[in-house]
Structures are given as structure tokens and as C-alpha cells.
Length: 112
Length: 114
Image 1: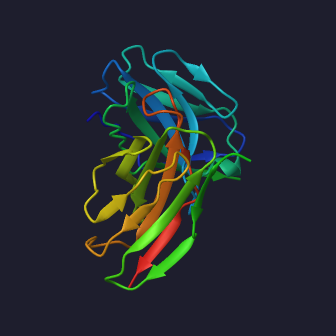
Image 2: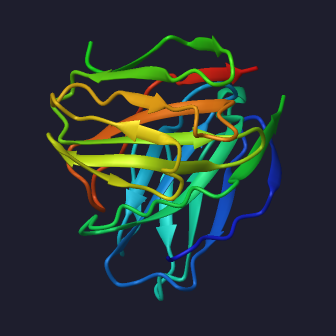
């Protein structure tokens, strides 16, 4: 199964941009890149996903490398509410096996 | 409001008892999932269902059972065969199984077995 690698943790300051990296060197051509985040004692929340092109939504931007072996989640202005564990996940286009691997994720701390 | 509900939020059971966790969604999603999360760890897939009356084992299905008799409901039974049942259990759904569709998660049920 394709896996992702993220730093264990990152820190940022409030109202500054944050770039959260993810490596997925074994990604297949049919894998979507999904990002979720989880606050303590809550279920994960979908953030964004993409296949090949960069994506923007109201929460964040997703920058995908040309070779698709890495991606970066960009929070344009971090707030205290963005402090969470962020998961980068690969999801097969067809969903035949649904082998979603969340891993331990990356803990983002936002300093006031 | 559309969403996923899980009940109860906290559940306590004695060892050797089976317990069923509820998961209901009103999003009209075909696919539903059960995950388990242990402290400081990521989520692990227990079972998933792509359509009514069909479900598949995930990575850690031993000691668990599910049913999918209705589109809206996907209950999980933690049996006495599950060796370490104490965990945070999360239910999710998506429009269909597969890459472009995000998963929506419920608030979770924290199960403690003593």
C-alpha cells in the first residue's frame, strides 16, 4: 500500500502562513492525495484533496509536486483553531480495497 | 442538518461482554466505515461497506462484526474475542468508495472495557 511520510510536529505563529509537507514517493497514478485534520477527542475533518493540479478551497491550498511524490498543505493565515493533528492520506481512485492508511499524522501547534 | 451520529459518546463494559456501537448517517452516502484509534496513534480501518448488504474486512477486523441492513445505519459489534477493545471508535461515510470523495466522520465513541 502506498504510504505517506510527515514530520511528527510543526509550530507556527498565529496569522502567519503555514506549509505542511507530505512525502508519498510510492504514489500510484490512480491515487488521490487527501488531507484531514483532527482536534483532540473529535473525529477527523476533511480539509482538501487533489490528484495532479494544485487545489484551493476556503480552508486551505494544496500544492502537488510535478512528479506527485510530495505535496504541501498551505494554511494561508494560521489561527488558534487550526491547531490539530493533520493527516496526509492516499486514496485509490477506484476505491476497490479502501486501504486508507492514516498514520500518526503531524501535530500542528499555533502560537498566539 | 445532515451528518453522522454515533452513540453513545462514552461506553463502559465489563470484559467478556459484547457491545454494539451505533452509527447513523442522513447524507444518503453509499459507503460507510469503522475505524479504531488508540492514544497517540492514527486511525486503523476495521470494516467498511460500499453498499447495503455488503461489507469487507479492513486491517484489524478480528474480534469485530458489522451489519449493513439499511443505507443509513452501520452498527459495529465489539465481541468478547477482541483482545484489547478499549479505544476510540470512529464511524465515517462517503458518497461512494473511491478516490475523489471525502469521508465525513462522526464524533466518535470512547469505549472502556475493564
